[in-house]
Length: 244
Image (cartoon, rainbow, N blue to C red):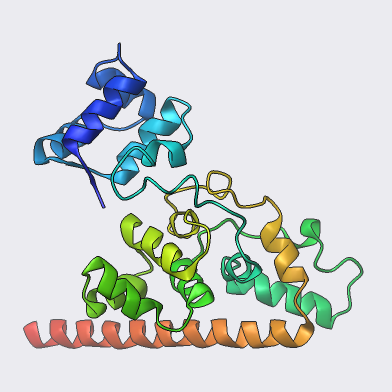
């Protein structure tokens, strides 16, 4: 979801009253042409707002709260659930812990030993949606946002969610409103209020059986993705052969 150019210009004049557009772009580390095009079109991307907020030392959550659709964001931030935290651990790290436990290594699973890969991982968005889904999340999202379910499914398959849908999903699931913005990579975990070692703690707290089931589910998803990619690759080769 983009913010209106009018609202953006008002916000920009408030946070940097003495800076022109070039100054703002330099501070934010974005191209002047990019911002100019967005303003001309009347819609400024949320990513641009976040970049400018960071450049001026403003918490991105507070900056977004100025704009329509995000007003309740700061008040809606709370600790992520363990299910959310575990959803943001890659299948590689899950398997590493499982192997360490099977070998009964001393200290296996400690924060230092795990050294988890940074998020988001390859399947962060889908894993998060599944972790917070009360049972009818996709249906409620489609109804409340007006986005067709097939378009929503396409976003999840591609591993992305637009900011407004991510926030709305969190509202429906009754979790921290910043969580969806963290798993999509718009906000850092720190900006979204996620504890620094929360993922490692939540993962290590899982029983061996739950860890095995989690690894099974993640590998199942990965297998389907690889199978789909192979089918698509085969279709591409067939098309080029027919053209040739």
